[in-house]
Image 1 (spheres, rainbow over the protein chains, first blue to last red):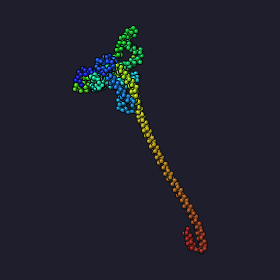
Image 2 (cartoon, rainbow over the protein chains, first blue to last red):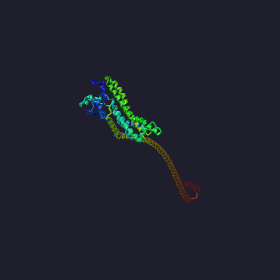
Image 3 (tube, helix red, strand yellow):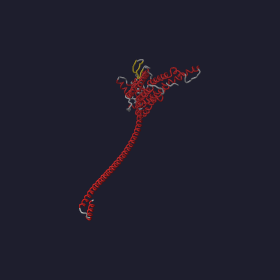
Image 4 (cartoon, each protein chain N blue to C red):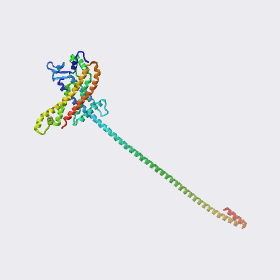
Length: 287
Length: 156
């Protein structure tokens, strides 16, 4: 659907711009009308589309699961309960296989991560122009210029969303590390590995090196977690946008990419969940 | 691609969702699963127990059946024996009674014979007396006497 007035690059840029509300240095708290304004807002801005879709999808997930949980019977389960139990058992098994400690948090955390990210990724399969088109129409009704109504429907193509989750996981990693090993143990893990000598003086000299290595290892966890999901989804979304630019030929191209993308979205949700479990089990293991 | 408040908003939403899931979704579902698991295990247990019970009951039933058959056969045999015995006894009694009656009849007959003989004897004596009287009344004629005596003898 390459429009006749916007050029291809404008079209792509429009699709990759979030609906941003923030504190602009000149206009105060307002909607950003273009990418430059959104950038000018700096940190004090919020992506309404990302927040709206992610919270909406999260609520759908919780609503469905809560509904089943409330009426869960020990008898013969109905269709929806079957599905929920399947998910719960799948996540529970994954957690059991990887995480050997006892925690009431890890399993529900993993379930939330898997289902939520999966739902956010699934938004990628909706043709790229549908929801932004609806948003443009709605924006027009409220008197906004449709060219300035940005709408990104896949929350996981927003680095803020993925980083927000991975930083939460990072906080949990640190929390578990300190809880299991104590603050001293945690600091020792950061400073006394991987180079270790019985010589006290040499050990002190090695602390900065160790710390540098271990700190990078530690910080790489949330960053890689966030960037992997973001990168995969962003690239997939970009390809969908490019496909939609080729006019009538988009149909035979769109379908195979969407089919392939089903694999990607499931896999990415699964990887995020598994890595979270692995990181947390590493954090709560005393070596 | 700006890092902004969305990051924090997303983290908060994430935390709330995880909390909700941990509090209200996960426990009931896993509890239901565990309960169903227990129920199925109990059911299988009960089934195997019932099978064992059934086997036991069948064994017991067949044993009882065999015992009652034996008992019935024993009772029938006993009854046969008893009835034979009763028939034998009855037969014995009848024979004894018959013999007794025959003996009695015989005794009665003998007695009557004796009585008849006695009577006869008396009559003979009186006849002899009467004959003698008549002989004495008539003349003594040998031919006549002979005839008379013969007549007497014939009357005996």
